[in-house]
Every structure is written in structure tokens, then in C-alpha cells.
Length: 185
Image (cartoon, rainbow, N blue to C red; front, side, top):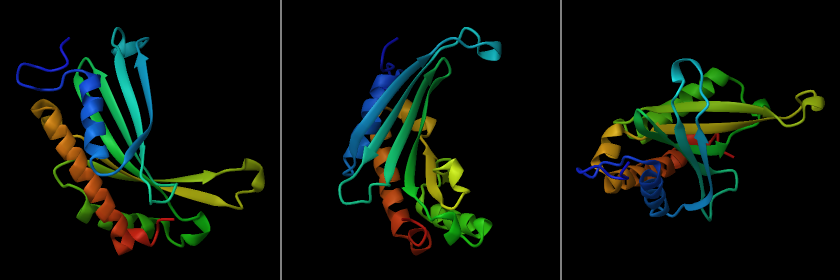
């Protein structure tokens, strides 16, 4: 299969990885790791299918070590897809008086900052680093995720890079939003 269609559409994982990496790096974030996988032993409705995936991890000088941008990109028989996630260390559980209130606050900030044309989501993950500690310290991670629109993949590498740049700028604005910044470590 050709990496590009006659119309410039991205058709394989490698040019998608390059376009995403270029867009994110143009905003000052640097690739700190990449992992590629191929899966092909599916059963049930996926029998006979295969997928190739890439996970890209980006960090930026001058921001806390616990902040990163992660990209998950996937090539299946149904085409290419992917998402970008801003991952930051959140508050310890003891600092959160109202989990639902925290989610509403973060959601409000994300709704204003993130591009409305794409599907976006928010996850808060809690971590007990030592199961024998009796949950004395429970940390959290905030994950703001934006899907790459299929229309960008069809439009080609330069559009994918432009979407990535816009998402990174939105993430940076999100981190400056007082509602969100109050909960980021």
C-alpha cells in the first residue's frame, strides 16, 4: 500500500507519525520516546485483521517533569486514526474535597480551550503507589484527550501537522486557565 493516496491522503502509519511529530515539535515539544506495535492474532469479530500502532511521547523544557503530550496513532483495515493527550500530574486525593466538582471545573476549562471541531475527553486517574501503605497517599493524573479528525488525515500531512499545532496551543492555553491551573501540580 502506498503511504499517500493520489489525493495526498495519508494511508499508512509512518507518514501519520511524521506529520504528528512535526506539528507537535513545531510548538516546542520534543519527542522523548516512541513505541510501535503490530497486532495480528485476533479472534472473534476481529479474526484475520491486523493493526499497527504507534505511541509517541513528548516533553518540553521549562515545564514540570510530570507534564507530557502523548499521541496514540493506529492503522487498521478501516483506515488511520489517532489522538493527542495532554497528561499532567493532578492533586493528591486529600486535596480534592469534591471529585465531581473537580471534574466539572476541569471540563469547563477544557470546553473553552480545546478545539470544538474534534471529539475531546477528560480522564482523572488515581494512583496508590504502594498498596501496603493503606492508601495514605493517593496521587492523580489529569488527561485531556483530543481525537485527530478523519478529515485531517484525508486532507494530508500538512493539515495533520496544523491540527497538532492547534491542539498543542489549546493545551497550553488550558494550562493557563485559572480553573485548571489550580489543580495542576
